[in-house]
Image (cartoon, rainbow, N blue to C red):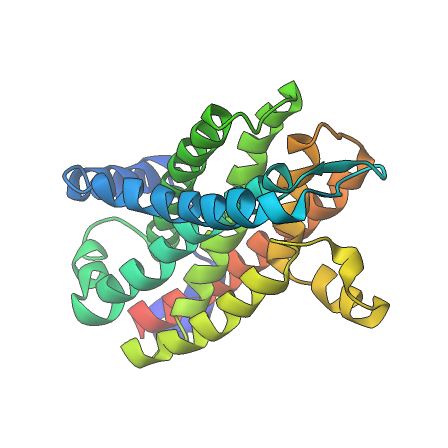
Length: 271
C-alpha cells in the first residue's frame, strides 16, 4: 500500500529504529576502523598544538584573563576547555560529513546495507552513535592530556564528559543533515567557510566581553559558543542553572538536525 501511496506516507509511518540495528552499524564501523586508531591520536594532537602555541606560548605574554565570577584565570586554563569543546565538535562532525559523504555518494555503501532489514533511521542513528563514540574518545584523550599539563584543578571537570557527549551529539546530527545537501567534494569548502570563523570568534581564545554588545548577541547564537560555555564553566569550577541554557540549546539543535537528516536521507536513499 505504501508503494502505491508514495514515499511520503512510508516516511511518516516508518517503524521505530531497533537498538540491534543501530548497534550493528556501530559494530560495522568498529570493525572497519580497528586498524585506523592512529587517526584518533592525530585528532588529539591538533588541539594539543593549539594549546601549546596559544595557551602556553601566547599565554606567557597575556597572563591572566577574566574567567568566571569576575576572577582571573591563567590563559592556558581559559583556552583548554574551549579547545576540548572544539575537539568534541570536530571529532563528531568529521565523521558525519567527510567520512559519511564517501559512503553516501562515492561508495554507495548504504544501498547495500538497506537491502537487509536495516532501515534508514537505523543507519542514521548508528552513524550518529559511532560519531558520538569517536568524538568522546578524542575528547577524553585531550582531557587526559590537559590534566597531565596541570590545567585541571576542580573535580567538576568530570562534568565535561557528559558535556562533550552532548556537544558531539549536536554536531554529529548537524553534520548528518548538512551532508545530505552536498553535491560533490568541492562543496566541503562551504563547511570550512562556516567552521573556521566559528572556531576563531566563538570565545575560543578570548572572552565574550571583548566584543560590542550587538556582536556578542551574534556570537551567543553560535553552537560552538554554547558548546564552549557547557565545557568551560565546570572546567573552571563553576556549576549552576546557567548550564541549562547551553545544554537545552545543543539538545534542541541535535534533535531538530536529526529529524531533518531522517527526512533528507530517506528521500536520498529511497528516491
